Length: 409
Image (cartoon, rainbow, N blue to C red; front, side):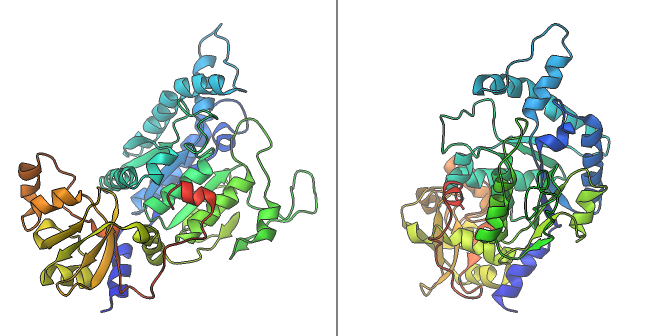
């Protein structure tokens, strides 16, 4: 069987994985505070898919709206002004526990645990922090829990330009890439992308499918029209561009559409669907190869490990490593070479070069006794490996957008 076939099987042997982004206007029903009935319906839909062996990650807005709900329960307490950064941060600080409590209680009714993850742009842009994010989310999914992801609005300020995503649309696209998701669902109050703003142009029609995002598609998008949400159609289209580039289909749809999440997951025509411009395998390989040009080292493996990587879809364990070349840090891209010196794969290192020099050739259970700490049993996990002979060669990208470069993708 070809390496392509093995790699594809490696991706397909896990459940269908979806990133579901829930916008502020959806979670509030267009009002100022969280609408628990709407949240309960959305959670029930996701819980149903999880019971059918889907994996779901939720990127949620609504912390500020949750803060308003907390204040509203305290008679005589004045609502902080949310127009400026300090007011929004106060409301977000009050609202994050409220938001998580709501998700926790709603998912618990279906016997599902949740885990909170606050992620900022440097967590994705930095290779080591990216690796930590990816591994943590994978571990949460492996135990059947649902990651509830948001940007940390408590410490995010406009002056930190470059360190924030600015809205959860772009964050959700970055998460979809990080976990190699099958699909990204951007759910809000708008029923997809229209040829013009349907609020001002009665002749506007919804676009059902987009194969390629070009200038014409971008021109149809606009910014947020109210003060409740940070994003608008423009950011959603940009998120779709990011996600489809790495193999995930993207759907922009109205979250109040009955059974919207399952219908999208099962291929129903709802909202606007953006088709992936590559498959997930090649998209993930392309992401790994974005670091190929700056790779500062390699590891050489024995014949058994080389065969296991090429044909078995295995992780690279320390027992199979025979030599380390160069100096690199945990989270950086490295080359993996066979006994003849031929590059067989690239991957994200789980340990520093100096650490690998100490643990190469030993069993994984000896890692912690030797180093005094451990980041798992793998030198490179199988999910972080791209085979060099997996189809045509893909060069490091040089045409990514500023948002993609800043997000590390």
